[in-house]
Length: 304
Ligand code: HEM
Image (cartoon, rainbow, N blue to C red):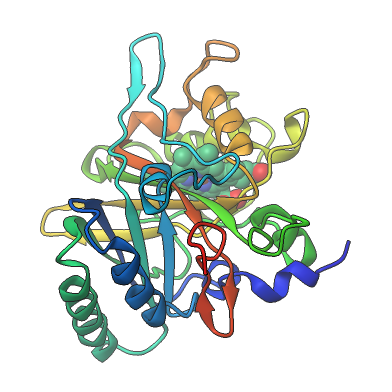
């Protein structure tokens, strides 16, 4: 396939998970001079060290009639008493850094200056500090093994569209999962492996894993049509609490929704074992605009 549109995507999406990051969300509080505020924000967002994403509500408020086909608020997923809450916000900023420990300070400074810029129009909703734990989740298991790579990753994560203002944009799902590792780590190694469906020791998938194992529930090629997503999830620790910011990019929300329905048991009644030690505390759907000349490009939603 042509990778022309790949020129215009936010490069931080395709790049490997960074050493340190902040996932910051905001809710819209005022539309007064909103266009100006976002134009200023765009100057700070190169799509690589700062990845930017907008909600359907924000897009609709930016200019009358603005609409990104396929963008919507995150629905509530529920089945048989298991329900995944959402806390849809309007703006998501993913600050990324591959520096050393000092870059945590740099990220904090960057977040502060963006916060000041957004103050007239947005209220801070959440800010989660994340890190790369050798590409593992805090359960210890490697996360991202079956991510698509190369052209397949580009095809998976980015919209290919004849309209250059949409071409290279991406749909982002965020969920903040809170773990109970104290309980998880008291299980036998075999039970832990059965929860994920891979062996901790060598990261191998094993046939005897139960059908409710996470990788059996989510096997991307097992869906019809196949349901590929590009995951860029990152662990977080806050005092005694810890978890994972699940972040997945795709050309639409469809593959994520297909996978989640099977995870919660809506397909065949079997619930993903993952829920036995961790649960999402909220989440949202966002649209990542494309990039032009090194800055995120809002021209699909703001008239030039
Ligand atoms: C706390 C939350 C989660 C944790 C700790 C977690 C962890 C893992 C791990 C350890 C793997 C195996 C290695 C890999 O291929 O990456 C995996 C695979 C996968 N997970 Fe998750 N995951 C979480 C949430 C989710 C959610 C919400 C989805 C949603 C749609 C999802 C989708 C997938 C997919 C598609 C795969 C690859 C399956 C395959 O094709 O083999 N995960 N996850």
